Every structure is written in C-alpha cells, then in structure tokens.
Amino acid sequence: MDDRIRAAFDAIHAEEALKEHTKAALAARQRPAVRRRRLAPLLACLALVVVLLGGGGWLWFTPTASVSVDINPSLELRLNRFSRVVAVEGANADGQALAQELDLRFLDCAAALEAILASDTVSALLAQDSALTIAVSGQDEAQCQDLLTQAQHCTAGQENAHCFSASSQEHDEAHQAGLTLGKYRAYLALHDLDPTVTPEEVQNLTMAEIRDRIQALGGTLPTGSGEHGQTQAGHHGQGHHSE
Image (cartoon, rainbow, N blue to C red; front, side, top):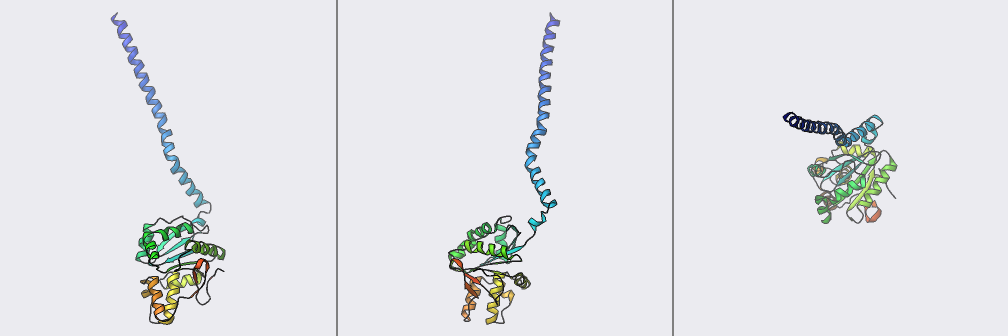
C-alpha cells in the first residue's frame, strides 16, 4: 500500500514538474517575440536612416534656401529643397534663446514661421506693433518665390511686417557683416544716412529701433508695395521681388 501511495505522489510531482518545464519553455519562446515587437519601431527608424543616407539622403539634409526672421530675436532657418527646416541658427542672444525654445527642425516653412510668430516673445512684440522683417534667399528662384508667398500668408494682417527675397550674393554679404538679411538691408539704409553706424551696432538693435533711427534722420526703410497690406523691402534693385 505504501508503495502505491508513494508512486501516486511521485506521479503528481512529475506532472507538476512537467507543467513548470512547459511554462518555462513557452516563456523562453515568447521573450524573443516580445523583444522583436519592442525593437520593431527602432529597427524601422534605423532602416529609414540607412535608406536616406545610402540612397541620396544627403539631399534631405542639404540647405538650398534660407529664411531669416528679425524683430528683436533674430534667427535664420535653413531649408532643404523640399522646403523643410534642416537647421536653425540664432543670430543674437534672443534669437539663440528662441531657437532653443522652439522645436522647428523638419517642419515646413509655413509651420516653422507660424510657430515663431505664435511664441510668447514674438507675439508680445507684435502686439506692441514692433517691426518684423522676413527675408528669403536661395539659388532656386521658384523655391524662393514659394517661400516668400508662404511668409506673406503667415504675416497677413501684420501692418509692420515686411517680407522680401534677395540674391544669394546679398545673403553672403549680410553674413560677412555678421547680420541677417533683414538687418543687413536696414543697416544699409541707416548707413546711407549715418556713415558712422557699424554692423556691430545694428546687430544689437531691434528692427523697431533701427526703423526709428532711420526715420529720425529723415529716411525710410527701402520698401515697395506688397501683398496683404505688407511691404516688401528692396535695395539697389537687388533680389527677387514678387508681384
């Protein structure tokens, strides 16, 4: 009798051991599947990066145009041939702070401009009727015209917003002077009236302050008729101008 009881208990223990072994085997089999599911998004992203870099992805990251925004913060957006922001550079301390505050990379031009205009800093300045300049430059005239149109639509209704496009040469001249395109145009106008003014001095002025100094000397910013009640700046006939 004792042998039969022991045999029955041994069978029960063996069955429990078999169950535990089966559970462990199933769990081991499921773990790789779980890991694969968790890694799937990362692997997909890595695959996309490989495709971009290996299949002409350099086109995506190569800037072909720039859009500078000047009000008090001054910053420049660099856009690829698809008009997506691939780099943001603050041209002064306020611009650098705004560039760090906003996540603009890979947005299209209109979305990036709307985010800038909606920021607490810029929206407060616009509410005070501060002067805003948006300048477009690049080698592809069709892209520049499209970017200019987007800028004009984004600033529609802002009476003190000035949008213009300029040549790549003028963009390079502005950078050599340490200024964005908008401030460079304003600097040239102010320098014509006051030859003692320097690019370094203008760099630390707001667009409203530059405008006020020009007006105090009897001049005006070089502007022409623009869309949506705005003005488009022009200097010495350079740059592309929208009709």
